[in-house]
Image (cartoon, rainbow, N blue to C red; front, side, top):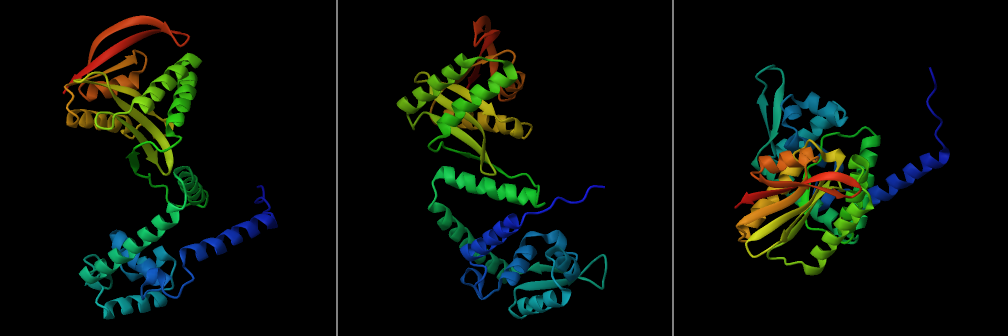
Length: 313
């Protein structure tokens, strides 16, 4: 059995330096956290009571274990909360020797104030960074959490307008993914660049949109809706990264296009795709599109069958 790898002193020092920096940055060394009368540990207990009812319902012992706290210390904190009228105890239906714990209205209000202040503080910290720097920071934090055995719960998907640099990402990822998965040559990437460039040059915010899908600070998909005519919109450049497939993101992006097209006054949506793009075709079919016509062509270094699909709005 091999022994654990040695850890260089410089790496230990780097982690300790980061810990000192970050605790100062977020203010956890203050006597009271987030300008409240509560300490860091009291805020942790309040948060757990408000967000993990499964643990809180099992009583103080389960809560102490979840937070890694001494039971006597936790008991004193809970006593403070009770005197302030912030929590309620109720005998457990499974074990009469235990009491389930929960925040009451006053406790929930106190937690909401703390979370609003925390949100504002983090937002203020991030505001000094541009969009790319914000993504790099959140990606690094995610990596730290993952490497140190943190929560593996899937992060929510965010659909947003493009930030500077995102259009270039769309072109790059289309070129890279389609070359890898379908052997399309550089002419496909050139076509994507033309479509994306025309969107930026001629953008009409009343009738056109681009959505960038983000998860955990990383871009995982995109789609465009562009004006074809006064009554017809065209869906273009739907892309879902391999890491985000199977989550319903493709359907979510297409549905967003359909909702916007209806609100913008279009009567019909059309799109052009290839017969071999099976996953995308299934999404279009589920969203109500129907195949109008197909025709063979040679493009991007491949013999393909192009398809035109239509959705009446």
